[in-house]
Length: 248
Image (cartoon, rainbow, N blue to C red; front, side):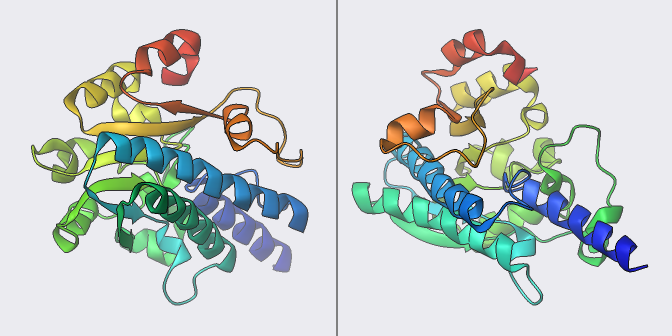
């Protein structure tokens, strides 16, 4: 029974952790965890700088992990959200942007009760996309009308096509950290989102990146580039040509 509980807990951590790009971090030692946190702050700093450059003057709202906040929240997940927000704030301090805050979409009842029982499609890389209530992301828009730029740490909602914060003119612009591109419609959908201005920037994992245990490079740009790919409207076609498999 105890072993079953441990396995279920590890699976729970994987499910909600991978929604914040932490799938390879659970089980790492303290050194690897520190490196991961520093890298996450660096990545969000770079993503925010790119996004704010293309959404000048917009208040910035960070969309975080619902399992990282509230009563009984996991400390590791909360720390991961905090590290990401640190990176966002560092970027905004550099360019004079306005931080609105961090918000989390409401979870479906079954996800709140037991996230391991939520059915996920094969290969889902952002499980939290499938755990939020219908309309939850539009609720964030209503609660934060002054936030014109959203930086999502957990991808996009599975019901993106009916999410008004995505489909309506005048909605927020989005910057995404390690999104599941299938929910955006693959390469064609990503291209259309960039052309429409709904999507302003996103960070993808670079194929063949070194292991998390490898020391960080002294140069922040070099460290970012060997692990991640920054995609913006002006770079989208070039990135798609170089790494076509990323958008399938």
